[in-house]
Amino acid sequence: MLIDQAVSASAEDDDAAFTITPQIMKLNLNLVRLLAGLLLATQAFSQTTQTAPKIDEKSQAVVDQLRAIVKEIKKCPKIVLYESKDKEGPFAGMRTYEGPTLNVEWDVAESKSTRSPYQGYVEAHVAWEFWLPRDVYEKYKGKMGNRVIGNLGYIKMFGGGPQPPLVYKYEFDLGPNGLELYRSFYRRSGETEFEDHKLAGGCWDEAVKNGLSGAGDRQQ
Image (cartoon, rainbow, N blue to C red; front, side, top):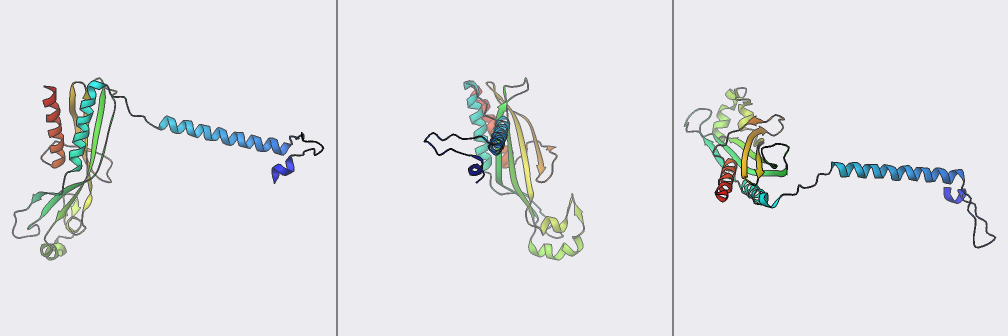
């Protein structure tokens, strides 16, 4: 409607002459501003979008080995991490379950360190929960309800179902010389700070240790 009003055309011949009115100038200026904004937004997005690093041929086998570790971690099932031997009392028959793996994130990037040309990480989100026979829980929850064990209360441990997932994070150095674990951490989901973690006997740690051993065997 605005364009129809803003454009005056002569109907005397087929070559109608258009007059550029102030309304048309305003329309064009707004269109230019819109296109400029879209262009800037596109450039900003492309600058924040990371592209995968180009892995040299000598290091590709090590990246494949890290991918194999991720595959094994994804297979980790629910296991009994601990089982109490107590026959009586508020912890009789208690179990701690860990697993299965809920989610795994991993990536490889060019390194900013002189240790290796590439660095990678694997972050596994793992379910875990405390379990107690129902009759034991019902018997002792009144007495133990406000008792804190570690940083959790008795009822929260045994009456609330699964706990927030655990997050295990493994950082690696990668390059032609092989795959090496640089450090490992863990935290509870919802927490922001990681704590140091030493590889133990869990399925996730075993997948890392076996992967490192396999990488070392191929380098020999």
